[in-house]
Image 1 (tube, one colour):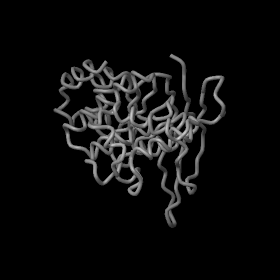
Image 2 (cartoon, rainbow, N blue to C red; image 1 turned 45 degrees about the horizontal axis):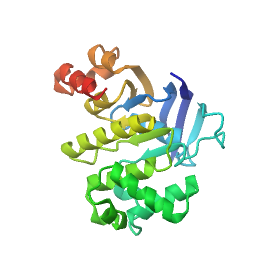
Image 3 (cartoon, rainbow, N blue to C red; image 1 turned 90 degrees about the horizontal axis):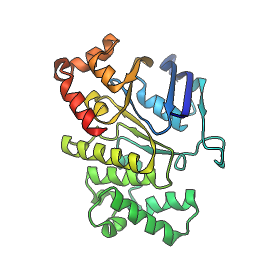
Image 4 (cartoon, rainbow, N blue to C red; image 1 turned 135 degrees about the vertical axis):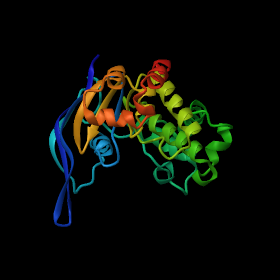
Length: 269
């Protein structure tokens, strides 16, 4: 595989009143073009901080050491990756990431118009196609709907459509299913898997749920207290975890019975 981005000794710190909070500690990791990589860990492990650092979305107050090297195609117009164009980002709560006073079709079309330079009618036509791709019923009506008129799962489908609208190289899904019920979670994971395969995107899937990660990812990276404690192929992580923390995450899922995870992961390949 060709490396898409390489993270070297990345540390992120925040100043909170009189104390300094270390969110990431010396994380080094390569993300290969076209792979599906899951970053897992419990709340506070640093996984969302890592996603935000990759996307260039960290707060200005963050102090960053280390660096992230990108290996974009030689014909890319910009040396640094562009959010929306090179990176698509799906946030945990679509109610917060979508504009409540703008029809969802217009929000998707705005991404197309900004990054692909299509005129407004072409951008709206592409937005409708994207709504069809994310399997929203009656895309024509959905194009004119406002976020509050849609269910949580439908809003997340809109957010995914906006994230892939400009054909990004990397799709980051940051806890994109955690606010949804179990059935809708499975539907969204299946949708992400299909879109990534069809468009040849690289996927960075952020989750606290090792079961979901195992269904989707080819490799899993485990973060604990801001440190990368384990990285490996999904089967190795599930069958023979090397770190006690990874084992504890598996213990929380069916008492270390790996077969259901491996069965689901195999079905997703």
